[in-house]
Length: 231
Image (tube, rainbow, N blue to C red):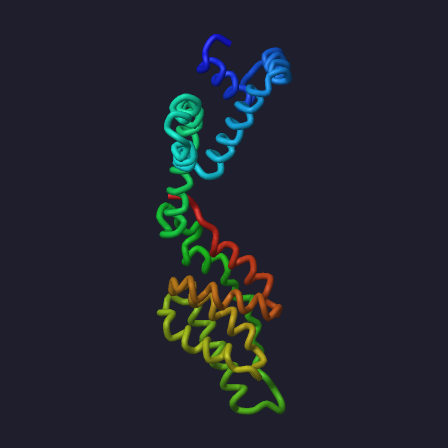
């Protein structure tokens, strides 16, 4: 090697696996008989490791902590090594930063399906088989059933959803109501119809946790509800 810079360039290329097979073998043979060269390679490899894990600033700070005469003579040229990595690392770092900001603030993403689309695909009248009770049932139970049938009929219409949500919330919270699961499913759909996505998500999660008759449908609908698309 004619100059220190040429030697350092070879060391850099050796560490970065840029040498040909023949050049690499010759350089390793040279290192085998030169302890000083092995030390140079070890120091440069350490610098490369610090740069990758802690960044360009950490490398410069560590090198500048050395006595000035030593730094200027032996390690200042290593700035070139860091510079070779800097553009790529900065590019990935910038892209990662942009992605994090977008995710944190919801910028650039939007739901794959609108609330209306989700409601239209999920609402199936045949899912609700409300058969009025006969025999020994209380007037209260018949009232609940009538309320649910009325709410589901209105759910299929263009009526405002807010009154339905209040009605279905009360029915789904009635523990001894035979059609409580149907009321909860209708409530989730009513929330979607009213574009209350967060509330619908909460109700669907509760339906899934209960592992009842509508758990499968709720899981499928929740997955669609959370799907996003970029821009």
